[in-house]
Image 1 (cartoon, helix red, strand yellow):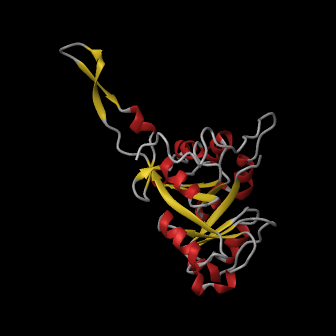
Image 2 (cartoon, helix red, strand yellow):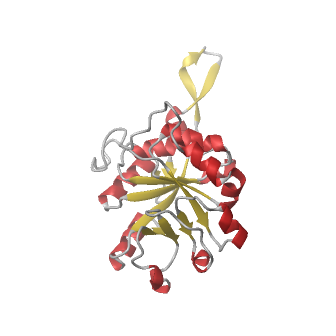
Image 3 (cartoon, one colour):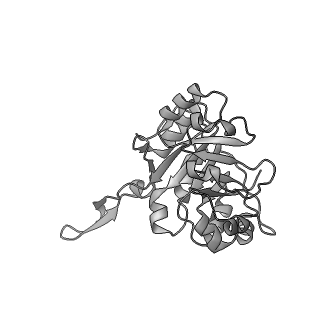
Length: 251
């Protein structure tokens, strides 16, 4: 059992005063430009994710403990990079979204002269990923088959709406994957982190620096920690396993 780590994603080097405001975060996700700037101190064992960084131009970061290299090019491209750089730990990142919900006439509601449009509940709960436009459950099954122990799901629609993380995507991914799941996109209030805590199943939640500044590191950490009398979620698959070969999954 473990709690969800609070990770901040930096695309550019932070100002000196901003670095002080990041003290206490439990991990960093760094873009290429952020590698040259000052960084807040991290606790021992805190993850450091290098996002879109070319290993050839960043040899100083090879072999650093708890460092992973994040690829947005899809599972197959991430696997190719892993084969090219086998000494580095690679993490595939993909966007996740809800497909367009269809409305259909219900044969069970209304009369001959009056019918009800009802939403397709399957589409309302479904989540797809940008990598190959496939069901998120199928995607994580493939990630496990390729040997990836960590994946990162970014809720693109959730980020646009700013009303919380896409927890349905997390639930669906967790049902077929027992590796570590990082999640991002949509957090604008502390209650969004509290909802994630109650749901459980995420190894890390990633926030941009402006959200961290608005929420505060200490309050954000407190929102992710189990409260008195609250059971800590067990991070196990909710059914099935990554080796289930995608049986019964939509495309």
